Length: 145
Image (tube, rainbow, N blue to C red; front, side, top):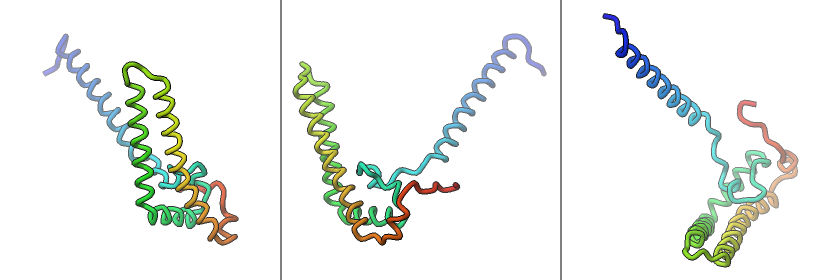
């Protein structure tokens, strides 16, 4: 049995749509499987970050942050609360520029406090690091390079 006329066109349209949806789905799955790993906690909270540190120093920074988890969690919660307050100020009716400016300043202060925790972990790690390890600080080769 062969399809002709409108049923054939409808079947081709359905097949083409199915092919497009499958291609999009496969592309999404491939993109998710090749996603770069999330940066270490210090990378997300420190201005300096840990990308330039060799793996042993990066691990030490991470361990220091884990040991200071309660204050880190409190600082993250404080930033989250400041962001929520900023959104509330931005949505408020009537709009109050001074309230939004104050909320932005508070958020900036709390982000700075969080960054200071990451920076302190990096500084403490570098205080104890051997000169040979510090000499390796710089752009690190990526996996597969």
